[in-house]
Length: 253
Figure 1 (spheres, one colour):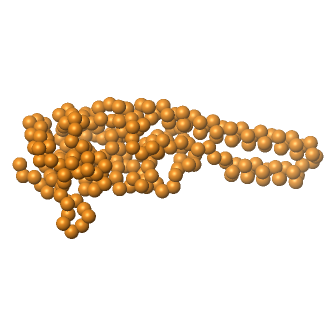
Figure 2 (figure 1 turned 180 degrees about the vertical axis):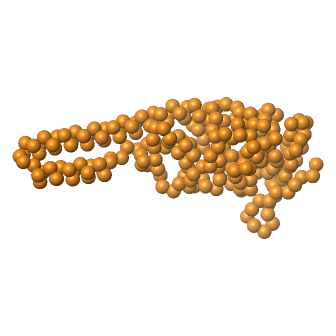
Figure 3 (figure 1 turned 135 degrees about the vertical axis):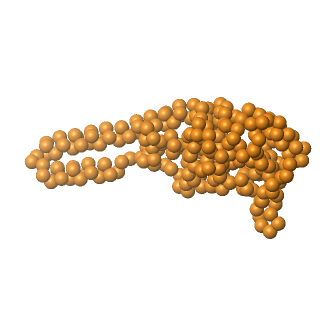
């Protein structure tokens, strides 16, 4: 992922991003998808373990010298089985507690691999009135914890997806397939905080098809007034003449 895009409406957050070379990392509780980072570890009974236990009981019943020895073995295996299931329940509860505490301290900034999505421009750039910023990922400090989102059809309701040590990536980078059009890539930092990126990472600014001329001029003047952005290119998105798509056109300034 050498190139990533981030959509903005024209507002104070965009201006702050351009002036300070900083991006806001929001807590997942503020996201528009109620399932986003809200997957729970579901306890499921271990039927394989139960079947193995039942086989052992059947074997014991067939080979038992007396009813007393079978009853004794039955109690032992039943106790082991109950302890095994209780451990699984406790682990699932602990994982969910761990999730909740992890979410509180986690901030996410959302990028996309696509700068010409009609829906993305509509949803995240004020109905094509905003901008889309093109970044390269050469700043390895800023983009150190960067992952593509995995889109799944089936709700992940099994505890086999989770474990105490390595389940956070699954939690933060799994979404419903309905969001697949976003081609989302996420960067993880601290919750509700600003993180600075190297100005050289910002390569281009794309203005939406409905972006007002006064906003285009304001943003271009703002950027050009800062020497740190001396290599930025500007593009204007426009409607394709022969398809339901968007095309970009270089702005000569």
